[in-house]
Image: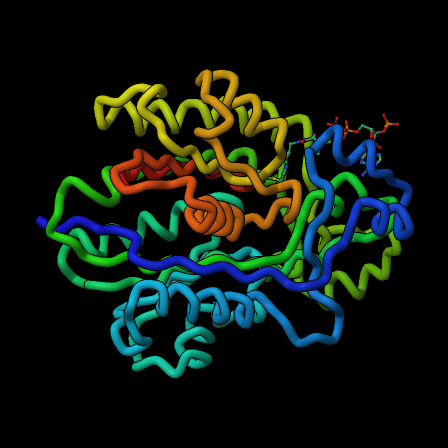
Length: 335
Ligand code: ACO
């Protein structure tokens, strides 16, 4: 029986820092409101015209991860790419990575699970390793949100939250069953799809239909979020899925060495920390600097926590996410 372990990680964020004060020049908002409600101080937004996209950022993160794993592009057997902001409606970003990194004709799969995207993607990769099919899987989470946000006062409830960035991990085969991914837990509840969504362009709400409506108030192509509703569900589902993972492995919240929650909102992470009575050293947050980078947030945070020396050999690391769909999940691993 094989196990899977992260052997390399990398992340990339655009240089362009957008502070809350910068946002207050675009829309009716202010630093105090944003920090108090979300904990966010600044985020990175791709500079218009720079040519950066979800795929290009993902490729940069992937190159670092492959190098850190001590591998080359030719050692990678499969690509899983999580994003809600793909460069093209189809094909997905995974195939762009295969091309950009000049990889052999390996398989590539895109995961469309928004904020839970990286947790889902890692879990998919884990299954391929555990069945013995692949040795090294490249898992990427990347988002180019800033190109699709309503940056006027009309969109302020959503647009101040999101940032751009990418992270990547190499999940590799190991025969050491004391280390690596112990279990993953995935859930969904589609009846809440419309509480956090971008309605179009989609086949059901395609560009010509949007143009034909010629309605200046049509916001169906911008993200819609019922913030309070999402918040209430997020705190419940985060807690449940962390407990589910711990129980499956006969562990307690006190066994957690590092919790990496999806960086949705600092208030949600703080609620979970308090509920499980975790010390500051047991939870890693970086939403203050990057905002919510959706499918990239967990892997960017995991990479930073590791690079800062906050994760040591043998630590119990818990990843947890909740987002649009609704979908949510956790991954329990021994580092
Ligand atoms: N600046 C200033 N005022 C604002 C802004 C803004 N950016 N956005 C909204 N407001 C105003 C509203 O218009 C409203 O004014 P009104 O009372 O005069 O009507 C007031 O602030 C309160 O608005 P609410 O939407 O009720 O604010 P709330 O306290 O719920 O906070 C927030 C909004 C931060 C989005 C919160 O609901 C939340 O955290 N929800 C969880 C969702 C989440 O974390 N999403 C992250 C992305 S999804 C994910 O990752 C799962």
